[in-house]
Length: 381
Image (cartoon, rainbow, N blue to C red):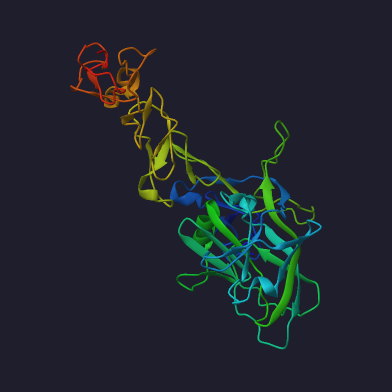
């Protein structure tokens, strides 16, 4: 106490040090700073910790056995749709170490940050042998891979309970740098999970292993219209709290979206695929669509009879100048000699139209694949 006032940690304020400072969330006595800074992928320092409820993700369908490189996939045995079983005859060269999770556990998994992965393990050794020194969980996404090591002793023929915190801390490592994973590593991987791998081998001479009861915590927003506790950064130790803690909701700048500003709004894409501190720019699609791939920028759902990475081409059987943009650059069906009775599936423009749509000039296009027995610019002869 200083003059009967509490001396707060760096990121904590209030008479009783019971509130996070602006730009920080998740009041936690175990945090040396008291609260953690807003991450928001470097786009803002304004965020809140919304008191969302905790739910679980669970799916026993679609799991495969694989190696770390992803070069092999083997469909496992499933007992009663509850237990995933791995037999030695599925791994004659002993290279399969992991269960690869189905799509339920991939994509944007930021809402699982701060939760736990729970599951049970049972394995039977073939004979006395050495344990396999591999990670218990590997999460890979957005060009980064993080690994978790429980350092548990897994005893054969016993149901072992595993709980893995989906948050930076003891046991988590960046698999490239081999240094402890930080919050940036975790959130980058969780923002776009490509592979979610759970350990399947516990001994080199292993006859069988199983996992069951696997669940992953995730935060879910309250029902529409329900009251929300606005004092989410105040610690109430006497009140049981089943909410997901540490899930940030950021005040994103224009053209950014997502709880942590991890996405561009529809109609925009990431510049140079840069996730942290990157920019979102408008899709470049000549005005023929408003949507594109958020990372590659490739246009999707091209309109006006256009196609191509930038909607810069006419569909087969059409002609025009898409670069004029919008309706003006719409491609028109080839009339060879008429659209109702066309004798050529293809045509090409014979002049560059720069002042208006390519349909007004008689010689604006030539049919190039007239059916046998027909000829002429429009297959009219």
